[in-house]
Image (tube, rainbow, N blue to C red; front, top):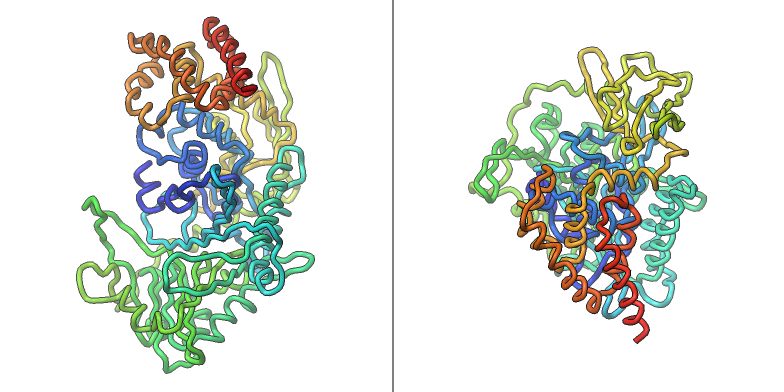
Length: 604
């Protein structure tokens, strides 16, 4: 799984910059899976990549989450969180405060989807105190996928003065999008830090003179949020972004996994004698579309081989529009989240960026040849026939029902009961759909019940309390499951989080090993060298090496205390989360001495 997460996405390379540390990050995604969500605190907390060893290390997981607390937020579409497999711990609950589920209302016959994939990141160089904003616009969701996607990175230095005029107007669509996201966050004590961090992020963008792109092909950019509105802004995808494409479109290369005839006809009818190429998925093609595109339709070859020479099935997921301008010398590349569909441009919330090529740097033929050419290295093949269609219609009905249920679920109420157990009651609207719908807390499959207003889950231990629930919908012979987040005002988050820590670090040996991990110069090296020890500790075994680590701990802490005293200071926060029985008395006494040493160091 770790290989899948990082082989193609490479979040660690794209989302971090050499010499900089991340202060705060806003991520948007349509779909989300929990294991890939863990890649964010991994990157922020340790600035390293996931491996199979680190992914299964409880120390690595806990410390990554602990170090990245309140440094990021992920906005995702309601009903688009996948149910994780192999739930061995309750660790995903520690990420609840960083996930905001966006449920948008219906429009016409369907629900509006939250579909953008953009990361906005504030970074600081600790040596120079230089601050910069990185904007990463992509087509990739925060999920593990082999599909072909695209990523665009723009970076701007935060200056001392607030910019104005033309440049302020150029960046305003980005800040308006962030204001819109901020308004989707409830103004509660638990979420106030998210609203404040987004506000500070917007303020930094207002001090960016210009965002820069690497390379020499492009000379300018424009941001295109779609489907959002506020007191002083409104961004209609059809009237702004699509219109800008069509105003300049002569020849065009359209890359989109999902398409519809109505949208493609807008492109083909613009100077119809100029060439138009479509790259899409095999199952998105119809006879009408084949006849519409005068420079052919292409799709990914059904079997592709990755760098390790393993056969894998991949498909198109990138959304790219190359627009060859027949009126001026400028050509454009649009990329981001919007498919070539009416839903994308007229219904959903999306985000695109437009890049303007330098004069004479790109032509229609040159762009097309970079994608479609003779030779086995070409990833695409011409589509000459229409394949049979699948079961998308049935799945769409079940997905629509999921959204109706999310609209009807209001909140969860928690009441403490005897012996530290809790009872949860789900509060729903009276117009809850009548189909077969089931629900259960994420870690409590055995408690699955039919959803209704007032359904209760009793005798839940503190460590299993969660705002994440699995929703199971049965529509005819179609059954789908999704994770939803249910607002729970009375959730005892601090005590629950401590209980999760204590359930994982539950022996003296595990505690000492965790402290060793915290102060290690290289977390990856520590895990690699102590993987066998971790496995033995997790199965309750004791080893001689366990004693060796405990003896060396004093020397390691002494070294770190002079080099980086804040790392030693952070141990106190961990000790406060632990059950006192797992902290050796000798360690407590030793740590008190270290705290005195740290005070002297800071007074020097």
